[in-house]
Image (tube, rainbow, N blue to C red; front, top):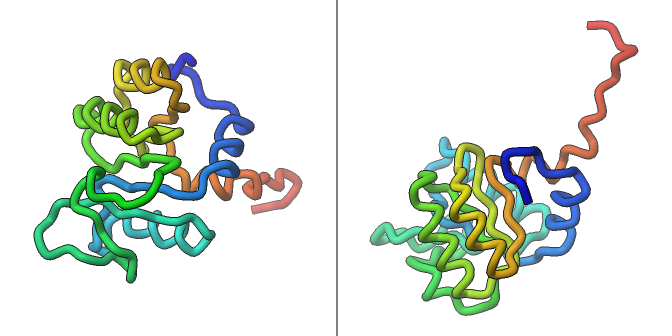
Length: 149
């Protein structure tokens, strides 16, 4: 896939309809952080969220158990969502491959074409520079151009 071009709506919706368990690396318990809101919405929508953050003493986010690493996760993961710097995506891609995830998803601003290539070569679907929270509700954002401002 050419990740310099936007993903199709069908591709994104297909992923979001097929996955159930999402490991979020870089999850935060800070309510002002975007990752906190994404966990809230995806969890409330019915996804099994697995926050991943090695911060000592961080045990829960919104009542959801936090794991210090991917290796500590005790169940299969469908999608790995990355709230980290773009330069960290390669390492996360390798871990996602090792854990047999089905999808590697880089949050808005998280792009590494080499990481995408190795993940796809290993059979994962890849999305970068997008937010699943936004994509989940995009089909309902139909503009009403006939309405006045």
